[in-house]
Length: 306
Image (cartoon, rainbow, N blue to C red; front, side, top):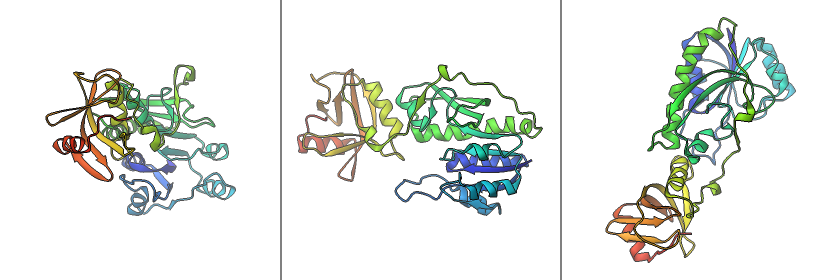
């Protein structure tokens, strides 16, 4: 079966590996050039294509007459999208005789849209997963072909959860690709009214609101910690403190959210409910852990975060 693949990131590589394992004829790969402003901690789809001697293209606007004509020349039976970052126009979606399938990092119809791995952590979910679905002119709204569930552990970060989802994607595709090769693709409609949609996240969305509960703040911290920009707060002097890791703790002090208490080596910040124990922070580019944090707060006389 002849396929065109639109792919990026580690999930893109997981999808390509699965197609290769199951003997799909990958005619061409479309991917993105890495953004020099982005922390590129993930694998390269371009390198994967080079290794497997498959033509690749890195256009940032695939929805032009030029690329529509080029894809038509390949005469694909099917198109796969694995974490490709652009919406695909109707003219391209109608080219393959079996349709176009997208792999999304949530259990649709929940968490349609952007950054589902981060959002499920921010919202404190206990479970998520991956969904293979038909692409239509609305994001993540087409019929579902199959899903694989993934449990979210208390210590999961966006990175560890993303790795779990990549593994789940490989397992899901192992189940579905042999069926897809027969041309009889199973599918069921989504009930979008029962789902949810979230947009992209910006670094400034990581600012902590200390009036939230300790668990809510912890969920934000783990959702945007490395390799993402990190959750942050400001000291009374306006210094930015990035909190790379922290844990909820019982409340034993303080009167207002943001109040800081130093007890031995522990630095605790009062929240709307309970407290957060700071374990790994960055101030002015300097990384600090445990005793270093308490020493800084003592010498800097920081008594409140805001």
